[in-house]
Length: 184
Figure 1 (cartoon, helix red, strand yellow):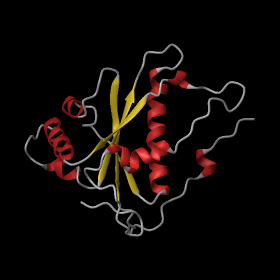
Figure 2 (tube, helix red, strand yellow):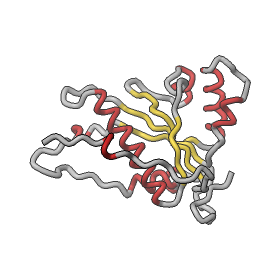
Figure 3 (spheres, rainbow, N blue to C red):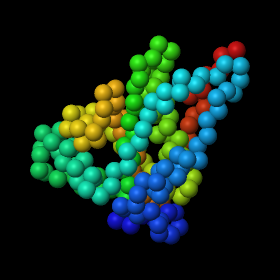
Figure 4 (cartoon, rainbow, N blue to C red):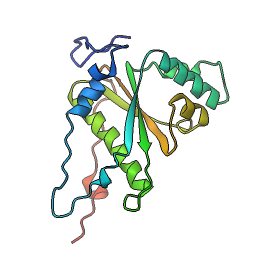
């Protein structure tokens, strides 16, 4: 399936392109961290508790088969079809490291933040992106397919492809009065 940026221009980094030339790593290379933004900003002890996995070509078939297996329906192909709903799938993985200063929940929050930042970056560059997760995300079969190591868990997948318009109309806005609390 060819990949296109918003506006229909073909993306030169099609399936099978080495990872160093792909849009995912290009977006990540542009990210910058600051070691301090005030007197004592947190650094997460340089743990970098995340990684991403680009899922392309035959890996999509293996993911679909692993999901079918985890759902107790091997060979059905139901989930295999779902892994082709976008041009690229990006698995987001939390990589926990034992730390006295940075608890597991905070390391997972950092990995989730990376997924969100990557979504915003890719959308800004003209890609369509949506997040997928579900009950099969942390199943043994799906874990094996992603070759996760000790201390790692899959958070979910970013589906990346054409930025097509939908006919659903404008999305609802956030009600600031309800969602934001001010303490003085």
